[in-house]
Image 1 (cartoon, helix red, strand yellow):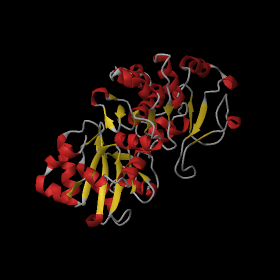
Image 2: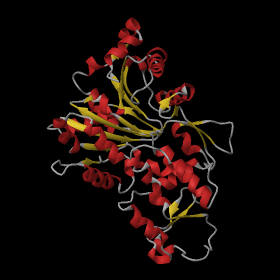
Image 3: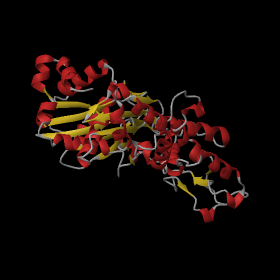
Image 4: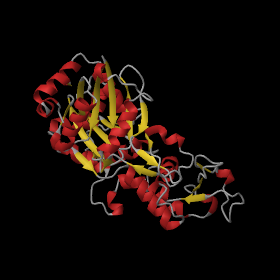
Amino acid sequence: MATLVLDNGAYNAKIGYSHANVSVIPNCQFRSKTARLKTFTANQLDEIKDPSGLFYILPFQKGYLVNWDVQRQVWDYLFGKEMYQVDFVDTNIIITEPYFNFSSIQESMNEILFEEYQFQAVLRVNAGALSAHRYFRDNPSELCCIIVDSGYSFTHIVPYCRSKKKKEAIIRINVGGKLLTNHLKEIISYRQLHVMDETHVINQVKEDVCYVSQDFYKDMDIAKLKGEENTVMVDYVLPDFSTIKKGFCKPREEMVLSGKYKTGEQILRLANERFAVPEILFHPSDIGIQEMGIPEAIVYSIQNLPEEMQPHFFKNIVLTGGNTLFPGFRDRVYSEVRCLTPTDYDVSVVLPENPITYSWEGGKLISENDDFEDMVVTREDYEEHGHNICEEKFDI
């Protein structure tokens, strides 16, 4: 019996058989400006000749799966002959869903997985539970950890103790990668170039140039300096999709500090945007979202737990999700949590080697467990008891 592990994120689906490797694939469909009628699914993105003005069709809205037609087409493609060639009669699936998911969405998902695709057994689980499982497997002496999962739609902070989540201390911050990209689009459009339609390109800019500042005001002062002294400023060459397929940063020595470039490239000059955009994760109030930043929320979450457990959580803070890849993210979380924590507690913040696929790897480990069979709901169970058996069995 094969097991397929699918960490079904709002931006990327992390998918692979438990005995093989993982691939990270866009969990959406695209339409390009030029070929308006043709829809591209998942990793067919690479076939689009001119991805400027790329139109995204997303199955998720605000972190919850609402557009089943799109999700079905993405899954058909992933399970189909071009990708994983799933033989449903002989396959179990581990699939992730967000915290506090709506029961209507859960019912639809059960129905599609069992009745349409006819998987033999299903395990529905939160991505954080898989990450926690992986962390406890790597650190067998630890009993507690707190998973900070900063993804596309929002950031969740979830304490796990002996692989059970502590519901009363879960915190959600409504800031994720989507909001950061959109904010960067807005400030670039306001300051220099209209890029509101260029989600794909600006997302690439964000990943290439943004970083988390360790001292916001100091970096702000550097960003105001003129010429050579301004070490924050970079010139980013935008792709034109004929000669330049992918944007890149101009090397420092090639930058023209005063005057125009002689070459015909389109340049974005970025200074304080580089660190002001990721700063929203630490101070959402900067753009009028009245919520805590990540470090403050971690401390607040831990303080909601029994006092004797608190030190164990502070020394097992695990960062997962795409936003944690910003340079300086881990150090900033550490220094801020350290400032907010009593001095007699140790603080340790762990950034795994690949924070995006970390929970997928946890799913791979769970599928190899001896008690895996007791965790899943089989098709016979589902046909006999329907949705209720899933409610009982899954710790969602």
